[in-house]
Length: 326
Image (cartoon, rainbow, N blue to C red; front, side, top):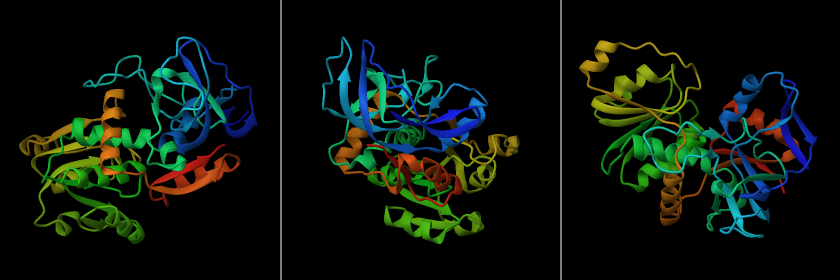
C-alpha cells in the first residue's frame, strides 16, 4: 500500500507492506486524513531513524476486516479514528499509557491502518469524508480546553489569539453554541472576516493594541496555543480572576511573565492536551445537536502530501488541510 512516511530524516511517499489485524483490532481502509500542526514537528523528534514510520493522527474510512473478539464493528462500517490512544475516562490529566497516534505508532497517512477497536467511533452522518477525516484531534483538543478546563459558560466572553487554526475554528463554533461571546485575532483581514462568518463577534488585527481595541470588553477566558508571542498580551486583556488555558506553543515554549502581577490579578492558568474518549463522545453529541462541521481549507491527494504540509506550514490556511487517500 502507499503511505507518507518519515524515513532517515526525510518525508517520503512509498509502498510498504499492508498491516495485518490482530485480536481486538480492526483494519480500516482510509478515505481521508487531516493534517495537524503536530505532524509538522515529528521529523525533528524522529530524527534519522532508518525505519519508515507512517505519520498522521486523524483519519476516516471504511472497515475492511475485523480481528478476533471484535463485536461492535463489522465489514463496511464507516468510522473515524480517535488518535488519543488509551485514554478512555475523563481525568485531570492523561493516564501514563496515553500516546497520540502517529508516533510511536503508525498513523493515518496511508491507504490502510490496523488499530484497536477501542480507538474507533462511528462517522458522523452529517459530515463529508473530508470533514470527518479532519475532525478528532483539533475538535477534541478544543472541546476539552473550552469546557473541561476552561469551564466556559453562557454569557461569558472568550478570547482566542489566532483565528485560522483548526482548533480555533472549532472553539468559535462550540463557544457560540453555548451562548458565549467570542473575540479573535488574526494578521489576515480575510481570516478575520471568515472568523466572523462562522460566529466570532469581534475580530481584531494581531499587531494592533489589544488593550485599546478591547476597551470596554470583559474577557473571562483566554484559550491560547501561540505561546511566547501572545501570553503576556493575553494576560493584559484578561479580567482579574480570569482563566487562561494553554494547549500549544507555536512560537516558543519558554515564557517570561511577572509573577507578582499574576498572583495579584488572581489569574487561573490551566494546561490542556487532547482529551479522553468520554469527552470525544460528548463532543460528537454536541456536534450532531448543533450541526457543527469542520472548516476544510483545502484537500490534496496522498501523492501531494508534501504540498499539503507546505500549505499548513505557511500559516495561510483557514481551517483544516486534508489528504484524500481512497
